[in-house]
Length: 330
Ligand SMILES: NC(=O)c1ccc[n+]([C@@H]2O[C@H](COP(=O)([O-])OP(=O)(O)OC[C@H]3O[C@@H](n4cnc5c(N)ncnc54)[C@H](OP(=O)(O)O)[C@@H]3O)[C@@H](O)[C@H]2O)c1
Image 1 (spheres, rainbow, N blue to C red):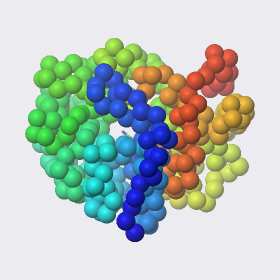
Image 2 (cartoon, rainbow, N blue to C red):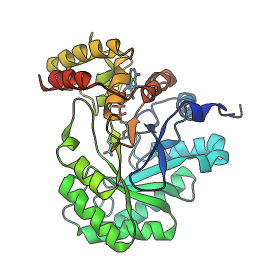
Image 3 (cartoon, rainbow, N blue to C red):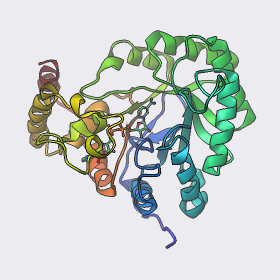
Image 4 (cartoon, rainbow, N blue to C red):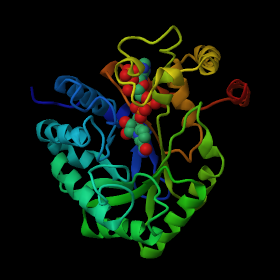
């Protein structure tokens, strides 16, 4: 059936400026790392994407190697584009990345100009789009000169194949050098994409200072710590959860008693704030304006409907923040 988006979608979301750019991103964005490969029924993928857009999520994040198998999330997204999204292309911010292993041999990994430019060409074909809004270098590559990697991003913007570029998983000093190198080439770095959640606070140790100083946006991936911060693992591993059905990146042994103890205590604070734990976890990463967007995954539409409510409750009292810090340090 033809998709007609919810007319009220833009009232349901809050948008933030991405660093000192002109681009606004939704406070919650959707990633297609999981649930868009060949193990998820197409109809389910479609309803996740449609629900996200109906909730005001205008940003879909991909990478060359999302699947399984590698490339499949982009290939499936290309079919979704043809069915639902071409008529809404100008309402969407679509991103993809290259930087991890993608194809065999020396040209399908890391940060060379050869890899990045050919990978983006492949991604555009798979996704049935002429350009992406954001193209990222997916992780730093210390063996390739930063001038080459950032030079490739600059060329990509000038070629019109991406409107903006970003970096992902760069540490503070690596980010500073990359941002300055891009700026010297005349192409601003729009955004950094690091991991960040209540259980993973490394970006507070220097990266957010660099991004604030340089006016670069920040989209935090895995803000729910792969689902652990929803409380779904408090009573064991549910059969329909990531840890049970797709444990490549969430191994059951990563769900430790220490984390679960913290999750149970955080759940009490969530209840006091009138939130679900997932909403608290998302509100918390959005408490600092340096974070432009929280980049979630979802295995079903209901999760998105629950999660987006976080954007209406991102203010914390000093007492709440202190209690949360005490739990997380405990
Ligand atoms: N740049 C990078 O290197 C990098 C790395 C990783 C991810 N990313 C990006 O970040 C995105 C998000 O990563 P992620 O999926 O790990 O993030 P996440 O938001 O921490 O975890 C999402 C998972 O948690 C569960 N979940 C979400 N909401 C829920 C709710 N309300 N109740 C119960 N369970 C819920 C779902 O898994 P189940 O229902 O299956 O349990 C869902 O797939 C990726 O898609 C990708 O775009 C980037």
